[in-house]
Image (tube, rainbow, N blue to C red; front, side):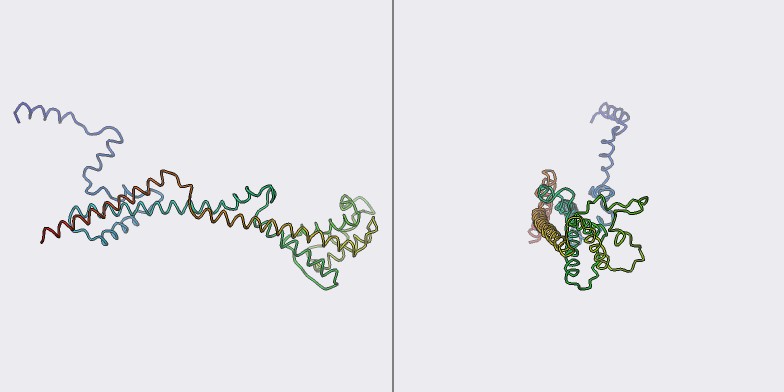
Length: 300
């Protein structure tokens, strides 16, 4: 090289101040990195743990036992590929969990016309239990057997008495007490709806008092036995309807969960990411095999 060329190189070097853009500076940071696989370049912040990466990398290195610089490079590449495959598996688990969680929602959407708005698996299961409780309570009343069936909420119990009142021809508006009326038409609460929290009567006793009061004030000639029989038949039908809906919904949910067991909705980007990691791992392992085979031949 001539003196003139050397002087020109020195002059040009003084003008160089390194990369100025963020991307260029980020690339230049890697200039002194031996393998480029330090934790800050591999671990996803807020998602993965640097300690886990280092333990994973050490485990792969111990398994592959690299003995040369090139083998170390390939072992690191295998560590990165398997780390990425673990990341892909975690993403797939997330897709599956989300899909499974939405199985009931998809089944409900498919059966909305049949199940009804607002119904859920838990709601239908509870309805079946409540209707069964009502039927058993009325059966025991008809058989004059003591029974202390408990309801998960008082609404079903009150609904039962209101239905019985309808069978007796008592308008539901008469089941609204007027405190200013000296002779209120609200005949049921005197026996049932006004019990206090410390009332020791069982549900069966409360039901009996209510049904007898309703039959006594019947406006259509309905008898106590007739009211009880009609009310029980009504709730048997309601229970059967709830059971049928529940069976259909449970079957649909089971089908949706089975379909969701395979994440068909994995996007192309995810598939390419997974395939890229698999190929990188295969190339790294093949490279190690070839290096070791060459080393063995050299020693022969």
